[in-house]
Image (tube, rainbow, N blue to C red):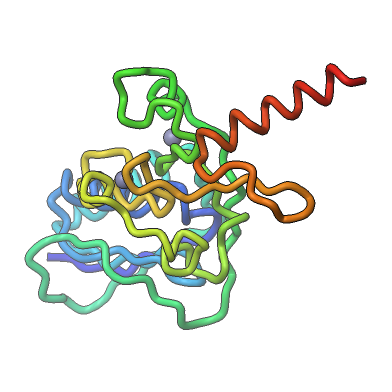
Amino acid sequence: MKWVHIHIEGMVQGVGFRPFVYKLANWLNIKGWVCNGVAGVQIEAGGSPEQIEMFKYLLTDDAPVESNITHFYSEDIAERNAEDFQIVESDSTGSPTLLITPDLGLCDHCRAEISNSQNSRYNYPFTTCTHCGPRYSIMQALPYDRPLTTMDEFKMCESCQQEYNNPYDRRHFSQTNSCPACTIPVRLLDNQGIELASTWNEALNELVRKLEAERLLQ
Ligand SMILES: [Zn+2]
Ligand SMILES: [Zn+2]
C-alpha cells in the first residue's frame, strides 16, 4: 500500500472541497483523512499505486467549479494506520497562504428550493449550500470553518445537522447551513434604533413596503 501527503493551495475552502475529497476517496477506496489548514487543504491518502495516481489526477481534474487550485504538492510518506477515510478537525497552526473565498451568489439548486412552496426552505432568505452563500463576509479567522465565522453562535437544527453529516447531501460540511427551523434572527430597526419588525418575514416585507412608499413619495 502506498501513502502520500497531499497539500493543495489556492481557493479551496468554503467551496465544498473537503466533501468532494471525501466522496472521491470513498469511491476509489482510499484510506486516510482530509483537513483544512491555514495554508490550504491537507490530505493523507493510502491505497494501491494505481488508486493513488487516479486520486491525485481526479483531485485536480474533477475539483469543485468554484475552487481554484494554485499549487498541488504530493510526497510519499510512511504507511499509516487507517480503517477508512475521514474529514478531521481543521488545523489553524502555520502561516496563512490561503486564497480567501469570496461570497458566492445563490446557486440554481438553492434558487429552486426557495421558489418551491413545498420545500422547507420556501422563501427562506439565508438558504445556502456548499456551492453558494457568504464566505468572505462572515469569516473571522482562518481556516474557513463554522466556529471561526459569524455562524458560530447559531446552532443547526436536527434536520440541518443531518444534511451537514450526510456525505451525499450537497450541504455536507456546509458551514453556513440553516433553515426556517433554526433561523438566523433578523430584526428591522429604524434610524433611531426602534424595532419595526422582529422576524425575517416581517422585516423583509416591511422593508419592501418602505422602499415602495419612498419611491411613491418622490
Ligand atoms: Zn446553493
Ligand atoms: Zn435547520
